Length: 160
Image 1 (tube, rainbow, N blue to C red):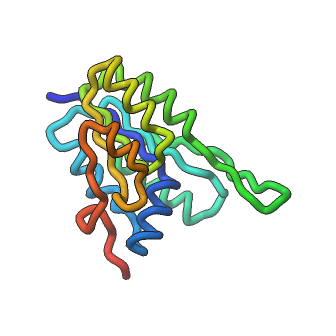
Image 2 (cartoon, rainbow, N blue to C red; image 1 turned 135 degrees about the horizontal axis):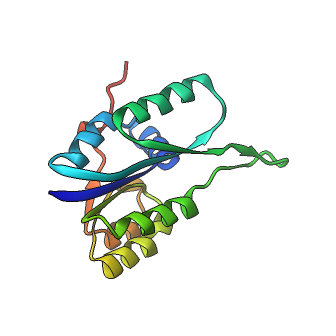
């Protein structure tokens, strides 16, 4: 059985599916797709903690599905901009778990991860599946993946 590690850049997936489809990502459908007939080594969702009750409920849903949820505090700067970047944390975890995984799944459209994907494919001979909204995913990330999966209807929640 293939061993898989799954990493989700929650903010990136939230904003890209919202912007392009005006819909939310279906984490249950995603989990079913990426873990089918595979042994999960690790599954981590990286999110920003605003202390909001609705977000806490969402985080508990992710935990119920099978994800470990890693949180960073939301930082509002004096100039009104905000910060909540998980790139380094995701990179460190991917490098750690790629060693013991046949497949690494990354859900993000962030082109900053292209070098990471190239590195683990070469160093650990991992098959890397990247999930993202095609029109909002960096071309360099798509190119670096072993397989790119476009987030479409089957991975979106219905609007209510």
